Length: 166
Image (cartoon, rainbow, N blue to C red):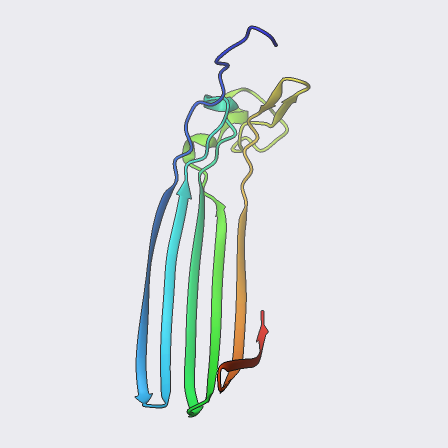
């Protein structure tokens, strides 16, 4: 609408906490054979934001945890033939972490016929907005990666052959 400025947009700013670390170990078995192992561990936490505070809030704390593992080998078969193989595993887990103050709203406001320990009911007021009804979810995924390649160096040219399975 013309003439309306600085409307209320949110009760909070997006605050994310990220913790992560990683490491890699290389080991030379021989002059022509090398192994490496790596790991990455990260966690993202967000308290969630909502346009409206209190019971009308749809904010829900969420976490995303990522674990990445790699194991690889490099072999020099000849001075101009190099083989590289890698096995990888990724684990991604995400979901909500409801706090105790989000539960019990149906009983507090006198609603019957639904779970009295549940969350505040979801309300959708046409052309106005959505309120409450915070969703609870959990998800976990595993991903595998296998990579094999052979590099052939011929003069000023390098040719690479291989495959990758995801």
